[in-house]
Amino acid sequence: MFNRISEVQVIGAPRDAVPQLAVLEGTVDDPDRTERVAQLALRDLRSRGYAAARLAVSRRTRCGIGLDVHVTLGPRYRIASITFDTGASNTGASDTGPSNTGASNTGASNTGPSNTGTSGTGTSLPGREAGTGAPIDPLAALEDSLGTVNTVGGVYIEYRMKRALTELERRYRDAGWLEATLGAPRTRYFADGTIAIAIPATAGRRFRIGSITAVGASPTARAAVLQTLGLHAGDYYDGPSVRTAIERARKKLDRWVELRTAIAGDRPRVDVEAIMDTGNTGDARDTRDTRDTRATRDTPAPREPRP
Image 1 (cartoon, helix red, strand yellow):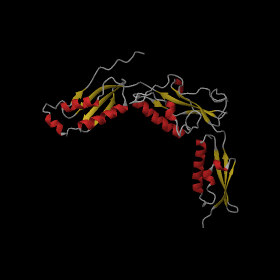
Image 2 (cartoon, one colour):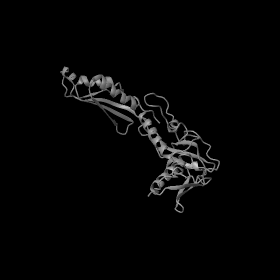
Image 3 (cartoon, helix red, strand yellow):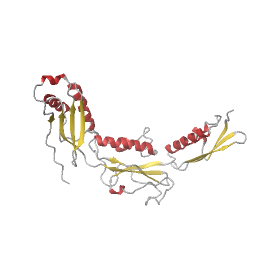
């Protein structure tokens, strides 16, 4: 015989604040399932801005099985600012959780942060989109759920923010900022229900293409692949353009070409090497000596500006 939950009573908040638990009324009693649903309900509350929310479920067994759901919502927080901290002050900073509000937060006042935008201490993040050259908008890259999550005025969801930062870091590296790193976001909660988010950011150097070489096959084939790639030493490294170039070479030359990249020592240079297969019939028409299996397309790279 199965025992059913005869009543779900929500205490401390409206019943529709935790609909995941409310709908358990009338279902078969399963304590393990109830615990899982309670965790989902708490996660949902926090995704709606109740960062300090707490939830506990107790069971009653007199006159049937009942669930008492005790909910403490706390203030509903909204993001007041998102800054990218590119200065030395990144080191050693820590989060201040939603229960630590007020002036004790490293000099912050209860009125919340007044600085909004993308720039922090030090140099603001550089950036143009790889391939198109359009400026990278870091704030736009972090927005989620149609502009209601992880944006100024919206709610903060940590795991979505971290996922967005991983993608934003990839975009910067694709645009040539191969040393770019974005750290875990640091949050400061204020008594007026606002959050200030600081993201440690390091741009590093922007890399250019160093040497471009082709390996394998015949001299004619190697020269053809270098011409088809259309890459030039000294240009800024552009991930999408490099990937497009290798696909273009494969289709036009009808042979498999692999591309290998390597950092050129301690210089902000990326050496590009096209590795070609040697099984195509096109090589049979080339009777020249193929013992020299490397072709190079180097042009002088521009000098780096002096500091």
